[in-house]
Image (cartoon, rainbow, N blue to C red; front, side, top):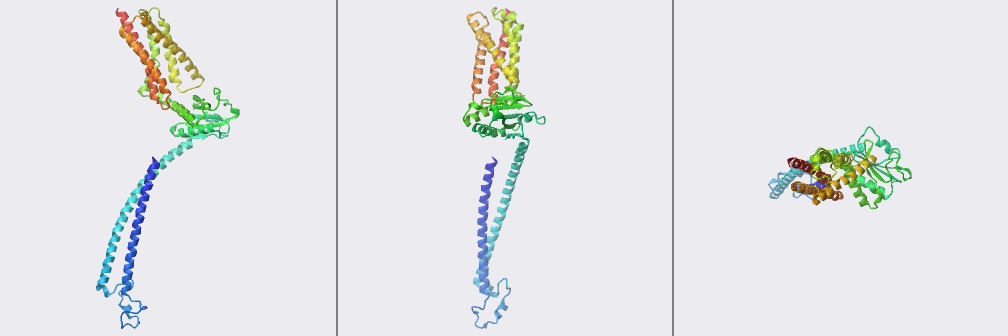
Length: 430
């Protein structure tokens, strides 16, 4: 934006300078013409005696020079001559034109002063922006740098004076390979959008082995996000790509995912519902355990208490996997992300296809209203799950989109609560 404004400003100033130069040339031309007219008038009224005086009585004694009124003005008593009066009139006209040109010069000077003031203000804004960028560079935030040999990565990660996150690119070799340069270029492009983070490249790994202080890193190259000494994000698929566009797209998606973590823990309505929706499974599990006898009135052969206990535990697992471990890929996060889908898949089969099949077979007797409500809820939840998986594969997906579809999937426990309370009321009434 600043570049285009400066170019437009320079073009306007060049146009004004050209106009001022043209006016100056015209003014000088007029001044020269007026000077020549006055000089001719002076010469016509003052004989030089070298070519002979027009007066036949003059003998070259210099007496004619005494008739001069002012040697510098060059005017004599010949003002009554019509030709001289005409020349004077022409000179007066030239002076009028010069006054008009001087007025135009004053307007141009005022315009140029306003232009210079506007340009000066733009330069001040650019200087302030440059000062902010310089401050970021001095602090190491919002810029990408390659660590020197005397700058160990371990010391940077354990720096107690700066708790800002570190995005580290760890690779082997001298850093002149195309893949390494592509990754550094992608980080350099993304750095201005991450003013809160420090982006570095570490090439100190000897023998192509990961550093000893990062035991869970299995291969190089790798990208890490370290927050207060804890690795919260890992991208170890850089070596699977051989084209710069693919590497840039991978890094862009990965960084976008890491930037979503502040959104997840914000106080906006959608993130709040997303964080709270995981505990919906625990609420459903508690209701199934409490009202197990009423649920047996609808289906005596289903394991209501066992499914309720599984759902109660699933709420805690879902929160740990989807919220607490968001964006993390360390050993602890991998454990939670492994247990959560295993139990979730089992419970989904139990409360989805199994219950719907028992309804269709007539084993699970349920009022028609609640039956249609539960079937519709299952269909909507599965649709939200599929749409969320599809949106996650898009390169320009937004965090809010992922949260919205995930909340649709987690809305199924709310439908289950409605159905359980409806079943309890129906059983107690009849």
